[in-house]
Image 1 (cartoon, helix red, strand yellow):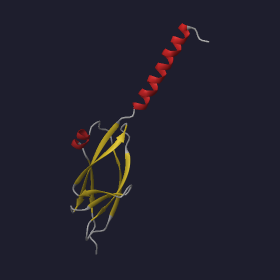
Image 2 (spheres, rainbow, N blue to C red; image 1 turned 180 degrees about the vertical axis):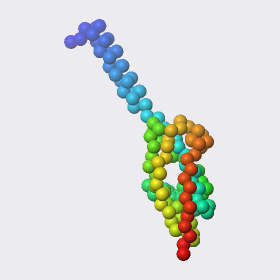
Image 3 (tube, helix red, strand yellow; image 1 turned 120 degrees about the horizontal axis):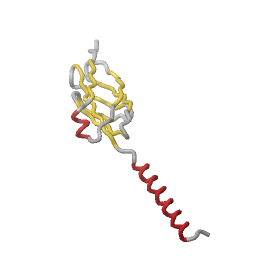
Image 4 (cartoon, rainbow, N blue to C red; image 1 turned 135 degrees about the vertical axis):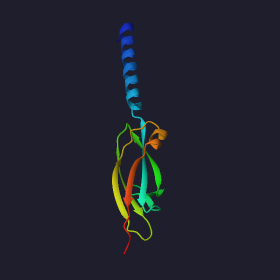
Length: 117
């Protein structure tokens, strides 16, 4: 059985370990990155092939959420009537701490679409 002083030492130790575990769990923070999609000609639909979400019509700027500034690999399909579909992949740099900071510095992704014959 632990005496009073040893019990206090163990309690302090356990509280310190619990605090470190909680800080570690909260250590991963959301980060953001923006991409500005531009097509030549404009007016192409942008679809994220990871989940088939429609991201908008070019030119369009899109925000990605990340964790701890880790980049995310993204593949999108660009479609426009009268033009060949184009699939492109790139890394989104999610280094910004806020959406606003990311929006102020978007990564450009420019694709020239080829006319159908």
